Length: 608
Ligand code: M6R
Image (cartoon, rainbow, N blue to C red; front, side, top):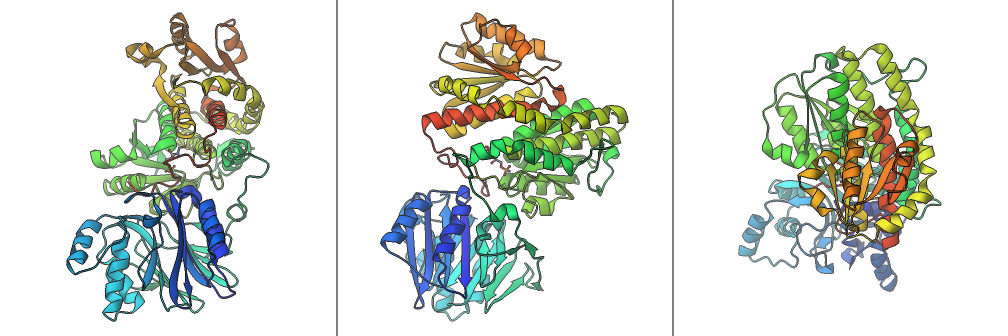
């Protein structure tokens, strides 16, 4: 939530780079945006309510230059998303951009107001600028003022500071929210992630929890939480991060849907030895076969991947498995027995609730596995072992390729745990892994039905409410289908276990409520089809996603059928994710919503 950046460029103007960097992290929030630079030693700002396009117009009307500056794109937490609350937040002495929440800001604000300080915004961030300013006025150096201010702050944050009359100094600090350092030919920079920095830097390093970085005189000095000077590993910025664009697609979401065969293939190639159809996972620092229980935790779409994994683990590995959303798990604080494994799934690797849940599970003596798309992320760093999804940068706020690559990793991990526990024979494991390797080709086939799905969407988008039903692993897909439709088209949708319909939701059936039924050919198919009949008997209008033979059974009684290739039920979640993504995408396009940046959302949820 919120994208931040700061750049010092020995070669000249930083504003174009700041704006380009902000564009690259706009997915983190787009309520308002702003930049600040030093002009003859003074802090000058341009800020605008709305997206970065609006900020660019503002800059065209009133240009800004400077060789050092900071920038911000906001997902509002405290204070309306109006220009007054837009970052950089500044006094005459210091400007700051902030991602996160200062939890004790009210206490600090009251204290500072009692001393006569006047506040101009409703943000939590302003206590930081006011505190730093008061310390500078007492004669503290910029670094001392920042360090002493940080000592007063509670909450989670990444901050970048720019100081009046300091044309060669940026200070960054990280506690709870991510912050990276970028190294370029003539630049040093700080930013929320490698994406933000890719336009002005070629190498990156990630600050650890509690680090403070000082960028001055072409050098970076980092001190850790204890104040000791430390070095952090510097790595090249990946080509994927450097070259983010929509290509020939109208939206990032559509591009990312179409990338799925490739990125699933690349993810599986790291985990399965194709010749022997054996898993080739990294060495685990604990015994997979000795695990007694699995707890799988995530948020949003990643939670739906967790729900699918529970079915796989219980069926294949015969291990007790719990699944929970991180925000509930962390405060429920359940008792956990030693010897269990806790699996955390997150595209960003920075989701605040998931990270807090991980820390709880670690304290409770669990082995920690992280499934992340960002290897340098906080969740990855704090896990005992990381299995990476190789989805590449996912820019569309609605998760698509991150979800299916998570499923790919979780499927392989389930097989590995099942084999290690002796619950799955080598032959059966080889068959399942071989089937998984077929998914990229089958997804290509599903994508071939794109045009038909866009026609179904023309009907679905007219609805006020939509129901999604599924059983077994198709139940989490029903939840995912409903989430996808809600978040990008703003149509109200609910996902249910198909067997639950008769316990209440059946009352919602009406000719203007599309019922999307996800029915792969699995052990509960006939049960699901009975639920379809129950809906049809009540004049329900059903979109059935299944294979052609099953669809044909309904002899024209369906509103629409979406035909899927025949496949092993094990890989059905990966295949059936595609039509629900496309249905939501096309419904949103017809509705004319902002598909890649839907209202109120942000990609990386670093506040709880
Ligand atoms: O980065 P994470 O996977 O931890 O994010 C979790 C959710 O915020 C995310 O999946 C969200 O639900 C997406 N917008 C769904 O499309």
